Length: 426
Image 1 (tube, rainbow, N blue to C red):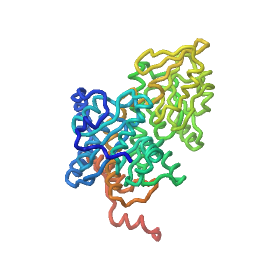
Image 2: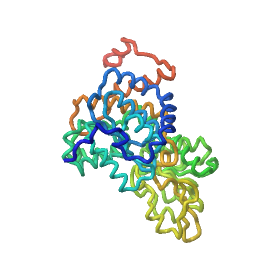
Image 3: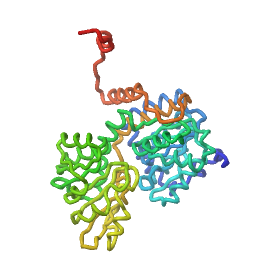
Image 4: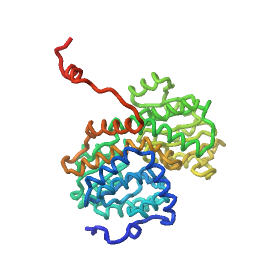
């Protein structure tokens, strides 16, 4: 068994990062978001007093930008020995990682890591023998079970950030493969109603517009998938003046899209109209060669799902007579018939690979949920499997958000509570 990393070494000596000298820029970014994350600030004070993670080894596998960095510092304030590792090689901000290492948190990540480097970073994080985990997409948890099964018994449990990861965890649980508890933070109301919808909706278009500098108003935008993330992307596209087409496989979500005012049609039909295509499904091969064959010249494709498999890059490459990078994060695929199609951020998460991710205020709620969920897991009271976040923690974060923005709401009277719990009243 690999020995636990020597904690007498400095965070820098224990890390694999590009350039520690970038730390000043990273610390400024972390300071900027901290001022806009009042929920995490309150939890940092609480954790500093209570030390819920005292002596615990925690690995956080998320997109390594400023909001994540502040979450890592909040968990560290609760007494944890924290290590961070990237959940996506293109979303890592090297200056933010340097800032964390400067402040004593070990990190294994750099922007643009190769698949081999990415895997080696996760393995380095696992070398710390984590007892608590925060994961995004399930890579850390699945690799732990596959490659380091002897360490599984050391893990008290963890939390999962996103839809894709929860799908993987539920599949593991159904197969009897998941050996410790994981809380499905993504399924909490205070996560998907705000992070998935408003956070994704804004940050996806931030990334697309920053990268392309193209007008959205008057164009056809095809949104592939109408889950909460897709709803947010479609909503913001409509607000920008686009004509929005939704493609779906779920009949209920398709009806919802129609009643929200969007056109709904099969993806092969929509492929003929789209100027922008955004995939938001969590599944593979949503746009393939058949779609590319009928797309308009100049069509722009972006992905907002966790993995870079929703837009078939093998099919794009097979149809291209040439491929070149024409702008940062923009690849041009010249088709053999003369058309040119464009892929943003290598088909990875466009809002993080080509932008700064969700707004700080939105991530304040999500990471507040993560911090509270991790505290619950640390108590060791949950059985192996996937667990929903308790409703009281969900509501706690919502109330903290309302307090932060100065909004008050009504409270039920005792009489009203009794009425709602009874069945004998007229």
